[in-house]
Image 1: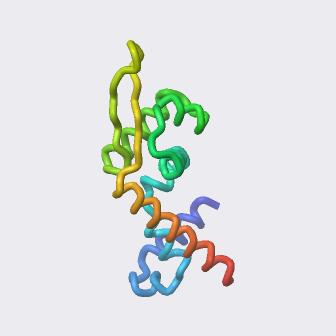
Image 2: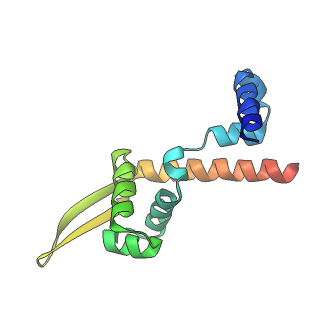
Length: 125
């Protein structure tokens, strides 16, 4: 079964780009920002879209994840320039605040546009 899937993938990969472009669902899926598409990272960006800032702890609880997962995914988004991180203290307790950057907003908007195009293409079938 997996061999058949791999063969189909190899055949698709051989097709000229112009031929693939004629397939709306394939074209839209290929343009998805893989950095945004991951569940936790999409959750972080979505949460920061409706909240000006959120702390590490607030995001972790909202997304029901572990410290390690939250840290890794937030760092990837920060390295891409999609979110900004400010570290400080509240009293003697360390506090990390996150906010969505303009680049992060654009990336999320592009991602949502691509998902909408994919959904439209699938419904038209």
